[in-house]
Image (cartoon, rainbow, N blue to C red; front, side, top):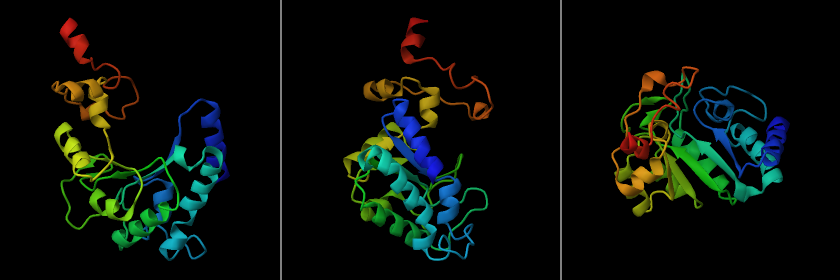
Length: 214
């Protein structure tokens, strides 16, 4: 927790606009949250109030540096990354989301269940979706995971979310906001180049303007 607090200080000194605690995708916070991985018998294990203690104690430490309105939290409420699981994800993440209402966070960032890690798996009726989190969380909600321009506009228009984040489409479309704004066709990303350790497939996608100039 002290390392996170110190990192928050360094981020502020470096000129960042804010910080997001990554409590998703199988990383350490999620390993504590889910009962499929957290088998502790001390004050950090057992009931969800205990399993969430590490996240909220660390959140308090980071908020002490930035203030809550410059801090966000990311959750993958239906995460099964690797062998991770939870016996009752609705109860687990309802507890977390409702407790986050006590903070005036910059936003809560939720990954849709149709994306697990780096794999698209389609809709899962029993999974925890952003619609569930929208009922539990009263603040600014950001959603991510398999959105298109059309579905992103729809979820914001119907009040299901306040913001939509794009990841993979931003890799293949460095000018993504302009393309979405102007209805320009999107370039397809090449997943085989993801996480390969060099710039290929990350910095060599042209903008739409560069394509027209060529």
